[in-house]
Image 1 (cartoon, helix red, strand yellow):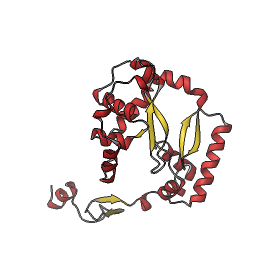
Image 2 (image 1 turned 30 degrees about the vertical axis):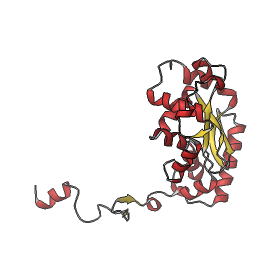
Image 3 (image 1 turned 120 degrees about the horizontal axis):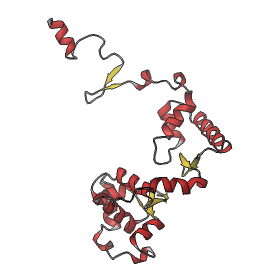
Length: 225
């Protein structure tokens, strides 16, 4: 193998090996999305691109955020969202597109809630992990509470655990934080049933062992929440 061939084999050859890539201020090489992706030249165009983004968000996303990600005018994105919402409703799909709290998100149709619950809960009688139990306890005592606040209390990222608890039907979205817009979570009737409680008033007195609201505010101010 020649010196030049070996050099290229190791991935350090000069020339156009990094064509279409830009170096970040930190020295990392990242793909120039403006060059690699054009919403007008992909299958389905703007409609499909917006649907693709909506499939991966777990909180309502504002029209402005979608427009910025796709490089489209806000009014165009709003028109597409309205059209999609109308089409989903008229076609009686199993899901709906709703505007909630200043953002858009795909939800299952309320009429199908029983079958969705049976599917998610069927065969899932395994015990919750320690992480899930700890997260569930924080939500139970601090509800309504955001994932960021739960994570601040536990000191770890709780996104995956919260999704598990949502799938198990133990917690649910109960609103949005009026200041930051974060989704707030609380426990469900199923939680009470599984814990053998008539109401949240029957919870053991563990709340004093959790950080106070003042402590949580300090954590948030420090960027930990």
